[in-house]
Length: 180
Length: 58
Image (cartoon, one colour):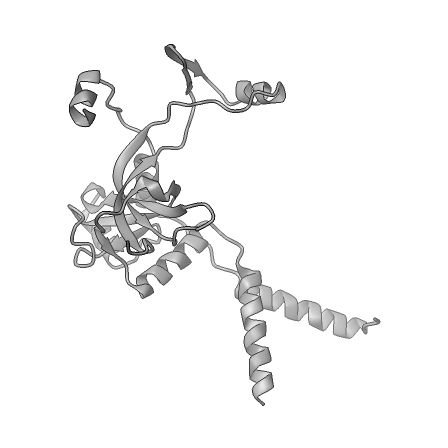
């Protein structure tokens, strides 16, 4: 099986649980809880795990990491059909790469997506590898596109990567000094 | 180790400049991207009809 990094697959993707939370009960209708506080109160009493009824959707996602071997998980992004965007002008902005929040998936690279799509840069999902249907890739980004997408994800989430950049810069300076 | 105040300020300034250079410029999503995020992240109507489920999953 090919590594999933950069590929689009059909997947079973959950929506984030939100109020009203619906707790599964054995042999009874789900119990509705309107806010998070009753859960934290229950946790203080030692009862912290429940089965929530969480909606899921079978949908194509773009995988942006390798499978983390320790956890068998990937990070992935939800997609947006270009036909759902408000105007032709916005569709063109996305195709040109001018909308930082929507990363265009070129149809020639994603021939098995039913329609033209963009990845929603801010829509990070953590998925078990088993939630991906990896029988067939719907298409894949090339290395340059993946690098550009990772940069956008870091910037849109305001990740603090400065220490990593500084470490790399220092290592390069030290290497250059040794060569002298 | 003792360090001269002038050297300390110079190193402090260098550290600040390096951190500034290494920092990422935040990106602001467009209104379209925000709508896409909200709409694609919100559930619709789940299929709960037992007959439809039986047909789909056996």
